[in-house]
Length: 200
Image (tube, rainbow, N blue to C red; front, side):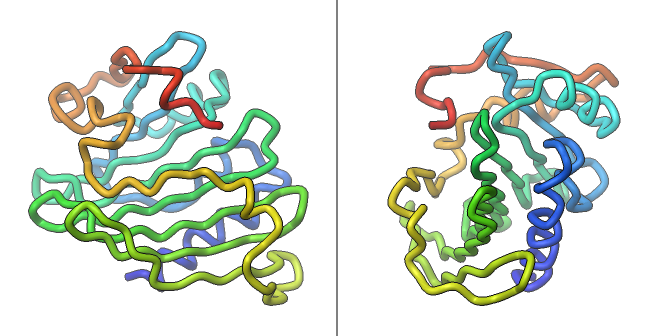
């Protein structure tokens, strides 16, 4: 499974030099996926069952955080989260895997440093609220050349690894309203502690 995810996420990173946020969200997600974004102008999280509607909103809002929530058998099975700063100097792709109990058990993370033309990939095993890094590598996405670790840009990395569902800044999209039938226009809820969840 991790190998498949690595291929998917790597395919996304290759497009980011020339494509926008919506177009870079390339990984095919399972039927029934809820697509979300953070609309900082309106101070709200919005979730959509229709990807075309989500695409349109992404192009309009230009969010710094967006993604998808996969459901399997009535439960959340996987969460994809993409973050980028306003200048698109870096783009972060996170794939969180959940077990049948709804607990986060793993993370595959790809970081694209746009100006440096570097990709870094990290794998984490997550248990009992703690994340343990199990693998790390870096390469040039144009030449596929392996790069030594750590990378200079790593010194500025402050991205959080979420180890529990309740710690995700968009938990309100997973629970309650997100489980109800959505109209084509989707549904929005106020952002809680917006300044704390903003991308740094």
